[in-house]
Amino acid sequence: MIDNRPGAATIIGAQMVATAPADGYTFLYTVGSTTSINPAVYPKLPYRFEDFVGVVRTVTVPYVLVVSAASPIGSTADLISAARKAPGKLNYASHGVGQTTQVVMARFLRAADARMTHVPYKDGGIPDLVSERVAASFEPSTTAIPQITAGRLRGLAVTGAERLAVLSNVPTVAEWLPGFEADSWQGLLAPKGTPLAVINRIAALSQQILSSTEFQAKSRELGLVPVHESPEAFRKFMEDDARIWAKVVKDNDIRVD
Image 1 (cartoon, rainbow, N blue to C red):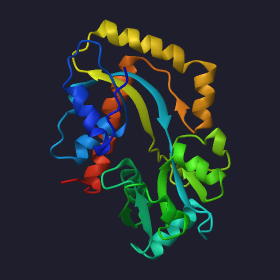
Image 2 (image 1 turned 90 degrees about the horizontal axis):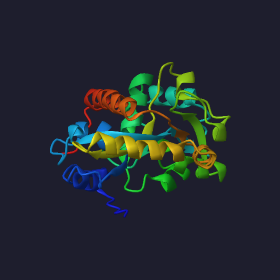
Image 3 (image 1 turned 45 degrees about the horizontal axis):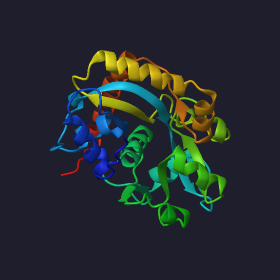
Image 4 (image 1 turned 90 degrees about the vertical axis):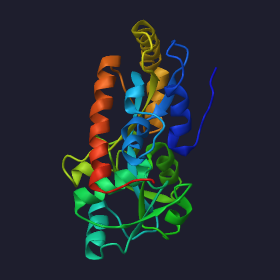
């Protein structure tokens, strides 16, 4: 049975699984911010990173730096130059304070030594981005690609280590800012204490799906990058990812009171 528990930046669903019996019958399919950003942003979070164990990471989720298709900004270099010339004058949209879209932009601006003003939206602000009321935003590939394909937005750069096949003409941020990488991910977690035999069994079954031609093709069509790794590698990745994003949150003083 699938029980969708959306809302509150994944906190509602995560709390439910964190407090569920570790009997192998309850798992959490979630996004990276659940364990990588929320613990650093929310001072009174009703769960801890340590309440979960990684089972399988399914895909990497790149973000796309986008502007209106009508914007005079044609490249990442143009955006950085404009932001540096008039610090704080340009606005950027996000899905809310402490959301991944804000934190990715904060990381980008710090790396670029530039400043823009944050405008949070419940819906991400794409209509205002299209109409140029805000200058730019980082959108997940899954939502950015349809807008780019439809000619409403222009993709300037992607946050992954490599260009996306579905956006082959859009460079990586690292081509402008060497070493920059700021993808999110999706994966399956279990409550701490779930039997290892159960975790390994679910991971093995999941990998059969992840390695299928159909899953690989659909993922790439959406701008996602399929992942193939062991539960042990996923848990190590989660620890490293949480440490990296916690530093970004701290360096940029991002918090939700």
